[in-house]
Length: 469
Image 1: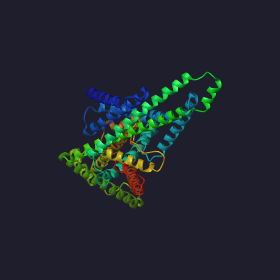
Image 2 (image 1 turned 180 degrees about the vertical axis):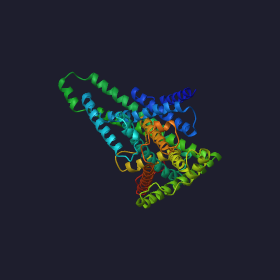
Image 3 (image 1 turned 135 degrees about the horizontal axis):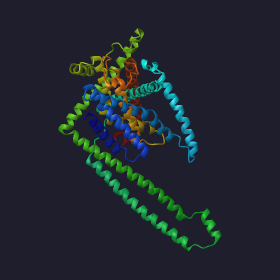
Image 4 (image 1 turned 45 degrees about the horizontal axis):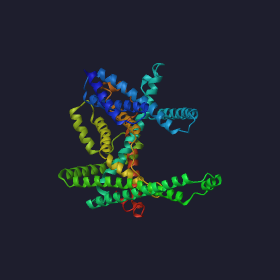
């Protein structure tokens, strides 16, 4: 029965991943589907591990299978996809394959070297027999991927922790009215009329050129003169074609503006309702918590610097009050984990919650920063596109990092499938210090970037309309 339940989890995750990854090449799509399915299974395994649900033997099988799949895909398959796309050198396939093999080999050497230099606690199993090279390689890969996942998790959480209060308290937009939408629709109609007239003019010029070519003489000299000296009709046709392309692009831009304005008008209408006001109040409370989280990260860094001389960086330090309260409640229900273990586990989960809750605000902040720093250049800022390959890679790394944090905080007195499936590769104190450093650094970088973008606005770096998009 447990096996059927886990197979159902894998099947549901695979169906959702297959629907999300439509349009990708078949092999790349298969890799993304397996990665997303394995990540969803790991999430279910984490929940079952904490709640001790199901048969431990069956959980152990799925733990080993999913972690092996994730390590293989994240460590070998996804780098191969990125490098293959990177080394597109033209039509010579042999040169591309040779360059791919060289770059891929250098990447694997750098990856393995980085893994060997991480602060790890290696098990005695790696030195017991001569048959442990694969185990040591697996442990190194797990340490390196978990290190990257924890770093990425802390960096994105830092950006989200700044973007949430910025979106809630500082980012203001001009209210959209029905008059604005009517003006945009009028502009669209006017542009379409201009496009229609340009198309008629282009058709007339093309017919005129065809008639002139049909009536032209077969004299070779006349043809050579016409080739090297285009007539006025051809020049006018080229001018009309360029103007038509500009008008069509302008129409698409106005239609995008109308779609954005309609969405903002809908948001304004929703914000005026009771549910909208409750949602705004809850988001404001969440933004205040994010501000507290950022300052708490700075305080923890200050504590690390003071306690470093004692060579005990894992001792003490200010903690997140909300996380501590939740940890004490969880310890009262599941006393197998100590309060400190629950603090670290819930802290990692809260980072995921902060990132997921403020995703829209973070994307809006990133789009604004991109537009601000590209406005002075030749290219204009646009919307950020989300690649399914990057999403699958990010989800796999993120989930594996969360599982590793859970594994690091399971007491050694407990026995479970996760203990054998995931080795304990990283030191807890190093993980805590890494999380605090990256979180504070990304928060500081986001604050500075938002300040610089505001200065660009004050200096006229934006158009007046773009300031309120």
